Image: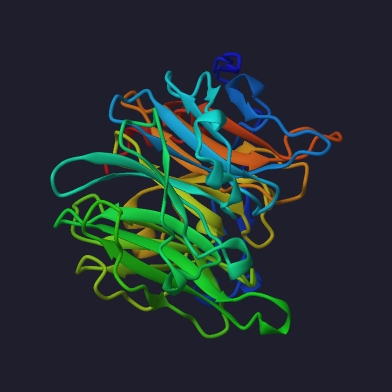
Length: 396
């Protein structure tokens, strides 16, 4: 198998920027509030970067997601060819993302017919058996029934194609995120809507529950539809005390901030979606808790007037910051997009030493090469030091 060379991390920062946006430049809940948040720029520290799949003048590598295995070292990454195109590629790292091997030849033949942003998850059934699943999104009957999948019962050594979930699971993208509920079932969220031509009237976030480790799912139903806005690409995660679920959502009109909502009853009902703070405004959020309890959420920056708009960034803050509408600690520019956007569908993993592995697709080179799948590594101990605010010593 082809193995990609190791590239090791160094500690470097190109800039720490102080940036503010006055509230009268914003809309929604952000209006009337001055937003100030510093930015650490790590994007040009290429020693942090590993190329998982390099684009060419003809080949566009897009929209990856990742999943970490319990050993704390093994990572799987899946993506599609072309923008929202066919699935098929898969890679595995056994050393925390430093080197990767391609597994494409192990994939079932039918997997290459699956479409649009495959997402990978590790689910455990009620008997304690763990499986890896990759769902994709066939959007109409010409591409097959919605939500086809492949599954592995041996930690990714072999894979087989599974039946699509069916017509009731029509979607724009498959499950954007999942969370395990207290009863051991899994809550999966995705989005659907009218998306073509003059029919681009709405997008809505939908959820479904699996009680058997991913084989079957409850009838999907909408949980977020907002007048004048288009919620999509939900990221669901649990509060530190375990008692609340939070969902961050892309807002696809891009006229203001992103959206957020909360549930105190394991997703049975949700609060009314409201605007996030300015610093969390972006597309396709995905995040992790680090050992000190803070959240690091990565996305394609879409914040109004942001100096890093269109690039791959991460927001650093606490769960309480999100809950209370506080700005958070700072942002990190992770990678620079030479496409002026079109990046930031991330995989986010964190290791026991606090190292964060952020993976995305991006136009990495300013030449004829198209988008590549890239990962970058960093620790908050580094960015806290570089930001010069002593944040690593704050009590959470």
